[in-house]
Image (cartoon, rainbow, N blue to C red; front, side):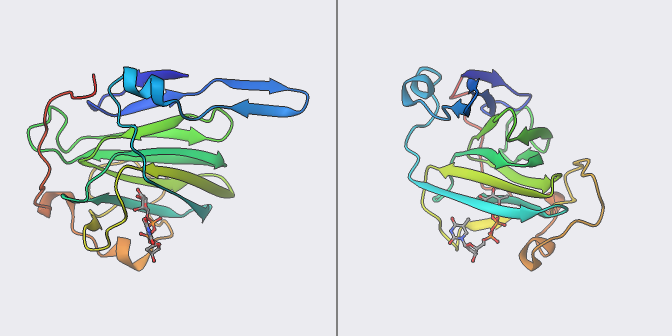
Length: 186
Ligand SMILES: Cc1cn([C@H]2C[C@H](O)[C@@H](COP(=O)(O)OP(=O)(O)O[C@H]3O[C@@H](C)C(=O)[C@@H](O)[C@H]3O)O2)c(=O)[nH]c1=O
């Protein structure tokens, strides 16, 4: 398993070892020992997954304090364009985004620190995205910014969206409660 820096401090792309043989493949997706050695959070307390059709865009989501959390995400079916936006005031990459192709073939994962908005667009016929998060779902703290307000080069201007996602404020109108605390995880 390789943990790689991204352009956004505290956000990592993780490439697991994939052992292929005549039966198929074996992939280890989490090691608390390795995560601890990189000072990454290990107290993942909720797990969930979504199933999405091609052309769906979910995001850009986050939970605000005190229910903010880290996310570890990976695709087990399909191929997505995943995106994060740094909302941490004082961060060297405040307001900036980065995109990643997450797919079931490589099994690459994204570790998303608290204070980043997250979303994705489904490139394949179907995509299943698995999440591990470090705090419980809190509907009153679960919010977002508008998917098309951060400059992310999405593959289409007309994705399939939830009503909730259509109504979020733009990044420029969002008053961020997140503060950058340095590179805690480096
Ligand atoms: C996230 C979440 C949703 N729900 C419920 C609320 C709602 O009825 C239903 C679907 O929720 P949503 O429409 O918010 O699902 P979705 O748009 O897929 O939300 C997800 O989007 C991506 C981009 C993320 O980063 C995730 O953390 C999460 O916010 O599931 C839970 O019960 N627990 C949870 O942890």
